[in-house]
Amino acid sequence: MLESLWVWTLATGLISLILYLLGTWTHDHFSKKNVPHLKPVPFFGNMGPVTLRIASFPELVVGWYNRLKGNKFGGVYEFLNPVILLRDPELIKMVTVKDFEHFLDHRAPISEEAEPLFGKALFNLKGQRWKDMRSTLSPAFTSSKMKNMFVLITECGKQLTDFLEKCIKDKNLTIEGCKIEREGNILAVEMKDLFTRYTNDVIATSAFGISCDSLNNPGNEFYATGRYVTNFSGIRALIFFGYMFSPKLMKLLNIKFISKSSGNFFRSLVHNTMSTREEQGIVRPDMIHLLMQTKKGTVQGDDNGTTNVKSTNTKWDDDDITAQAFLFFLAGFDTASTLLCFASHLLAMHPDIQSRLQDEIDQTLKEDGGKLTYEAVHGMKYLDMVVSETLRLYPPAVLVDRRCVKQYTLPAEPRCTLKPGDGVYIPIYALHHDPDYFPDPEKFDPERFSDENKGNIKACTYLPFGSGPRNCIGSRFALMEAKIALVQLLSRFNLKVVPKTPIPIKISKSGFNMTIDGGFWIGLEQRVKNATKLQND
Image (cartoon, rainbow, N blue to C red; front, side, top):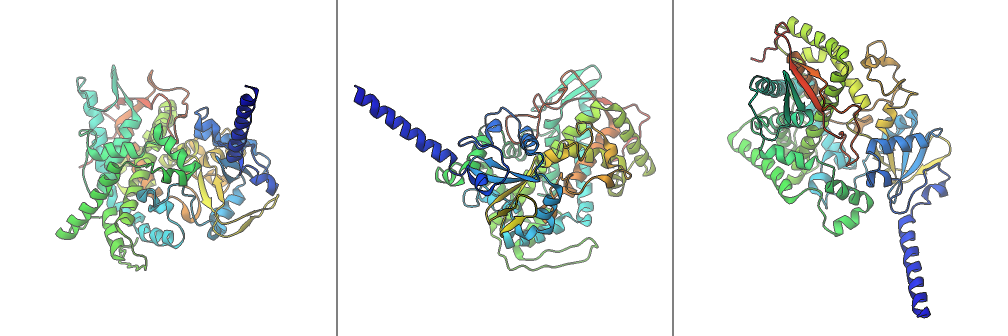
């Protein structure tokens, strides 16, 4: 009996030791380098609070940032993976701009072999392939292309405000899938649901050349698929954690991040659209047309309206092409809707700021005879200030990363040499909330971005779309569609706090999406008739 107990005790101790060694075998990485770092936990590293839903992702990153205060950089552990967290704006500028060639790539836990639509997208491409594709896609976001898409996006904004006006006038109207309640003359709306339908329609028409009208046709497949692929919470958050922990294990187990049906939907959509246009000679100023040119090895068009043809030696297959369309959809679907949700909430909470913005919108529309133009939207300074401050408080990307591709010694003490494959984090959310760079950082203050004040913002402390050559390629598009929606909305409605409005808001702990608990419930009140009427004819 004693012998059996001794054997079990020994076996248990041995198994525990093996598990401990497996869960900590990389956790002496920064100690060996004499780099300041956060103490890791076996297996979890420093990811435990967000994995166990004790903290939201922004809270986790701010915690890392604050605990490393006094250092220009420090080490954290993404499960078993050691990553350098940059705190110093000058170091961030060195890594993302000046010495960019040493940090050319993103760290991509999901490989193209495991998930082609993820792995082959621009965000995950590496080296020369990234350079070729970035150069190829850049003409899609020039001013001339933005102007061409402006009309399409404005029509989506009109559909949005017409739908809301219809809901206010018809008190018996119920719309499948839309979260709407009525409180007297106030229409209480869950804005995330509303704005994702708007951004879905914007992408459908401006990128894919199809019309969805997801407000009046709420069950369309384009919208349903978009909601699925952009949801990084629940089981899909666990799958993503799995890829971060061990990409090889997830590939071995054949656990997919994107369902087969969703992947096939995008493939058939892109391929069928390109085939139809090729056969019928259809030319439309959207992403699909650019991708068709890409496949042929040419890209045409520049900001002056002249023809500029670029040839590349890279051959792109069907999945290469589909992956770019998929990335455009993935980024645009959630990023702009998140910005619009937080902007609406902040404006409802600050009626004085909302009123000033409405005055600017009314005056601009009056000067242009009620017609919304590309130049008018980009000329609204206070609108830009409000959007910029919203992005400071609630950037859609909590952090971004870079992967070292050439040995590099960080120009700071203690000296730390990074080798190819080592990862670097840039903590956007934490920088935006650092009182050393933004006094009273939790206050919503658009004046930070006035002409008089924005020059005082320290370089590389405000990074809503990243920094350097690998910044967000679609930032101009996202800003344009968000501003169009705000102008359309505020020209016709006042935004109000309602009983369901979460005060204060709490960032959700359920996943990586920048969203809140309880939903973005905002009240909409139709403006008085003497407000400037927006002409959409």
